[in-house]
Amino acid sequence: MEILRLCTVLQCMMVCKAVTTASLNSVTNLRVGDDIRFPVDHHSGQKYEVTFKRKSPVGIKILAWNSERPEKPYRIHPRYTHRVQFHPEGFIGIQNAVLEDGGQYEVQTDYLGSQLRSNDDSLFELRVFEPVSQPVVADAGDCSLNCSHSRGTQTTCYWKRQSADGVGSYTFHGALLQRGNTSELGIHTYTCIVENPISMEISEPVTLEPCVGDRRRGPRNYWMVCLAPAVSLLTIVGFVTVLGIGRKGGIVNLEVNSEKV
Image (cartoon, rainbow, N blue to C red):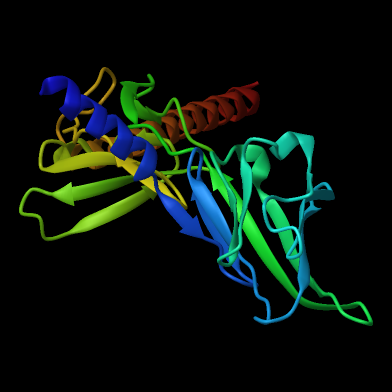
């Protein structure tokens, strides 16, 4: 019984695989390993031939099929021998998409008659992405945190700050998060988010703790920052004033002594 159940699960994994239908004249995003279908538009009751091409970034004639020989395509590019199929019910399928499958595709239908005419050219844009992995947060030194991920293509990384009451939030762009005012530490949670057009993963929430070099008194530190330069300036002014008075006194004494002479 267990063997039968395992076989059923494996069969479902193979048959119930995600399949996406490409959208005409627009961009279709696909994850690595999924299957994609390209619709074939044709007029019923007429003999026709279908040519499936990849136009960019490299031009490739992938498949050619003729309604007079419907058993199988009469031409398949070697790179797609085991991955591309033509379905007479109206679509072309590519299995197990890879990153290199991204690009522009064309389905061309030629109707066969006394005079060959080309018609029904359909264009599709396909982008293939590797799903992102869950981000990992680590100490980056200099009172900052770094968010990294081991898998994913064309990703965007940012931080989300959430208040303890869940009312307010704020977004910090980039993988590196600098710790702010220490008076705010402990009252917010931070999560790192990594995403691309087909997936999104979120790190475990973290609460920032003071690090070496943090000023632990919060707003009072701003007064210390302002007070230190002020004290230095007053010291310099006082020194200059005393020096000036001393020099003036020396000049007066010199003049008195000169008169006595």
